Image (cartoon, rainbow, N blue to C red):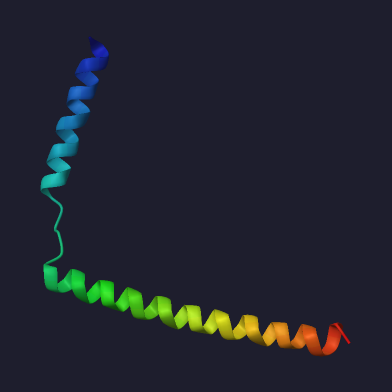
Length: 64
C-alpha cells in the first residue's frame, strides 16, 4: 500500500502544479507559431544555400 500512497501523493502534487501553469492566449500562441514558421523557413533557405554552395565547390575543385 505504500506504493499506492506514494502514487496518490505524486498525482496530487502534479494536480497542484498544473493549476499554477499560465497558458498563453490564442493571440500569443498564434504569434509564436507564425514566428516559429518564419524562423524555420529562414533557416531552411540558409542551409539550402550553404549546401548548394558546398556542392558547387566540390564539383568545381574536387571532382575535376
